[in-house]
Structures are given as structure tokens and as C-alpha cells.
Image 1 (cartoon, rainbow, N blue to C red):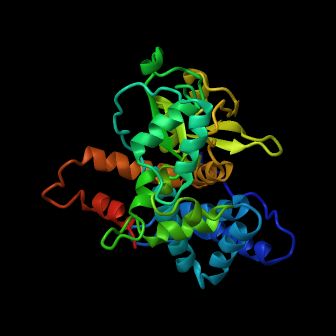
Image 2 (tube, helix red, strand yellow):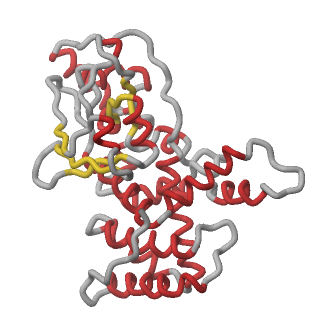
Length: 327
């Protein structure tokens, strides 16, 4: 749930100064007026403060500090926060939706075949979704990577889906002229906050590469896409993650352990820890700042307002939603 900014954690330096601006704006937030079609001031300032605290040390954290420093006044700080809501938080939540259905049961290839197919996957141009799904299922023995449950096509009782860590739509439409939400702004923000060269890793059709794919049963997939469930790499232990939840009890109900270790008997690559860390950063900042509730409220009101009222009373909901679709 939304959390006040803690005391300044930085020693006297540029990060300290930038974070102090966030603390000052947080104190003033109750008396500030929200910008048109923008999150409330308290959400804006907490998003910036928590993002500065939690961004990976080095270039990502430095980029956030520079953006805060370059904002000349409180209004520009709130505009910056809105930019992050649109091109970071909303970019991940924008992946919500059903997974294309796949037919047939994948058959695990031989280890030699896996090596050959992996080389094809890594080549420029990537693979399509269906191939990625089948290959990921072979990599994970037709099981959910969080619960261990088997897919019904493999004799189990669950519908296992291919879940993209960096959303498929976010990458596919980046840079396409006329598409405002999936614009270059998304690529810029995600690249700014990632600990790896994201454009190189996922460029030119490589959004379906196995490093960006997890096999999850349907409920886990939905929770992951809704930013309710996330995984944080455990330092010093390869392919091991602590599992976090936005709502207490979710892991218990779904049978998800507090810690998971990914492994495979094939030569296929496992999910990339830097991509899961970026998703986790988005989730934590979204919930700590209140941006998650802000977006959920807009989505709820849009769902309730299927048809705009003739008297214009529902126009503000549409405007808020459109405001998050920025260039």
C-alpha cells in the first residue's frame, strides 16, 4: 500500500539534494493542486522518491537523479512523475489481457535438438509467439515456474501460458508512427531503468526470446501482469528469486512458495534476472507511491462507464485515461 518517503538515505551529494526535493514536495503535497489529467501530487512525489531510492545503483539511479534535478519547479516534477506513470507503470500494466490459445501438446526435444533450436532462437529476427510458447513449455517440462503444476495438455489440471516479462505489446509497437502509448518514450524509460542493454536484448523481433518468457498457470500470469506478483533476484544465488505479493495471502491461496529457483534439463536459456528485476522495480514503485491504485481506479471507472453519459459527467474518466496515453 502507499508508503510515505523514508528519511533521506543518501550522503551529501547530488542524490541527497534530489531526494530532499522529493521530501519537500511531499510535505507540501496536501496544499498543491493536481495538474490536469495527472495523478494527485502525493502520488507524483512518492513515485519519484521511491524510484530514486530503489532504482539500481549506477546509471539507472543516476538517470533518475538527473531527471529530478532538471525539473525546474514543482509543476515540472509532477509532469516528470506523470511521464513515469505513463511510460513505466502503465507500460507494464498495459500488458493485461488474454494469452493467445495454443493447440497441441509440446514434445520435449532431444538435448542436441535443444542446442540447435537455441541457436536459431538467438539469431537476429527472433521467433514467433507460438514457437516461443512451445519451446518454453519444453524448457519447463510443461509446468508453471512458480507453482510446479502441470499443464492439462501434459496430464495436469492447469492452463499454462507464456508470460512475457517485458510486455509483448510494449516492444512490438515502440516507435510505430501514430501509436501514442507504445511510443519511443516507453523504450527510453525502460532502457533508462534497466541494468542491461534492453534495446539490444529485445530488438528486432526478439521480444519472444526465452529470456523474456516465463511459463505460468493462468492465475499467476494474470497477477504478474497486474503488478500484484513479482520476483526479485536473490543476490549471490543464480536463478533464485524471492516472490512478493501486493495482497497478503495471495501466495498461500495459489500455492506459490516464498522463494523459487529456476532450472532446466534442456539447453534453453532461463528468464533473465535483469528483466525480472525491472518488473519488480515497477511493481514496488507502483504500490509504494499509490500509482497502482490510481491506475486501477481509472480502469474500474472505465469498465463501469461503457458508454459516456450524454450530460458529459463521465468525460473526466475518459480524459484521465487518455492523459496516460502520451507521446
